[in-house]
Length: 141
Image (tube, rainbow, N blue to C red; front, side):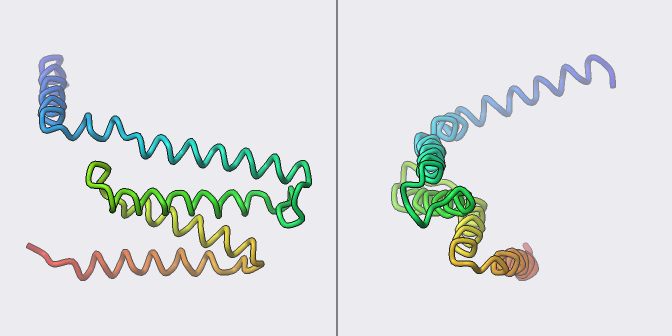
């Protein structure tokens, strides 16, 4: 590709970015305090769970099952973020992918904590089938 063609592509990309920011979308999503707080809470919870497991402070959180609890708590925190996004108009944005991640983490965590390790593959299959059916039944315009 010629140097002029490359330069034209860069200019087009810069124009699209300016349009995006002028509409307020780029800056709105770039400064998302809820997402930052969610991941910070997940890291803090993970650290607390690992500390509790290593110190032997509870009989049900042990070093061998601590990651199950971390996945369970991460799924719960992500689910809380989804509920907040749906409830507060300023924080609204698409939550479909986040919902899938939250459900997968919850199911893996709950299944492992309760001793039902074979449940999470069934959930993955169900989510895949739901996506497939949703894509096939979506109206075409």
